[in-house]
Length: 317
Ligand SMILES: [Mn+2]
Image (cartoon, rainbow, N blue to C red; front, side, top):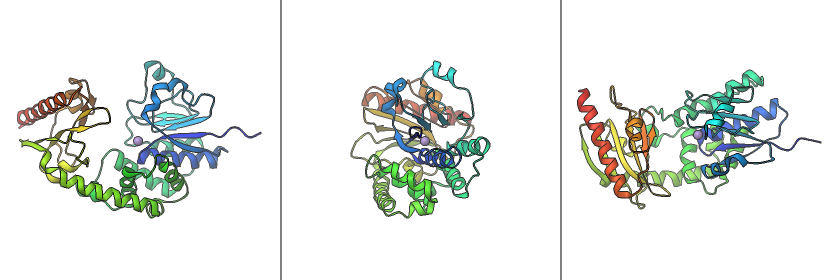
């Protein structure tokens, strides 16, 4: 009797989907598996110990789970508890590398070493773009916002997925074909056109949200639900700034987001994540966030963070 089918659970973004496609192909070719795949979301963490109880599964680009037969991740926050961190040891089936810009390169390296899986050029290309997209290593703000390469069209299309399980279909396409073939699918092209219209609207809605711009810091308030959001709009409209700080809505409240301009970074620069920690948030040196309890708190925190970054810039001059 054949073993029950293995399901690959993946983070629903570009590098997570590529991770699922790479692992699916490697396991099919080199481990005698016939895997299926399904995206996993943050809501499922609440019952994490019982996740997929009694079933066979792998996890990629998402939290460590001790029952995962295969697991790969690059997120520094992958371990939900200290006891889970202690269970993890690198093996032929598990690998965590928080220094990797994205997850697929880990899987490709590991599969080449332990499964004797030769890296197909199309997967190498997907891994390179995963690094660009997940770590925001775009050559320019124009490439980030308007880039027309197949990987960027697919990533943009994902922002307007027509249904929750659409990403499963796209993973299937990535298992079989290269980026150009996937980007040229009719459903991807349709989603991409919708996403591009949303982007254009977001860019045009950004200027009135700006509160002030001083000494290389821009503060904006995009807390209204009527405003569409484009992650790099501040740097597109104001390429001269070093930092943007803003308030944006979330499903449950409001988020304060602060980050360096990737195409005009401050030198030496403050530690944005540490500043955010003083407001109950966190992040990396170049980007961070916090979720204050109310809109007025979020506005106050954003203004204070912007002032702190401005002070840091002036002190470094
Ligand atoms: Mn991811």
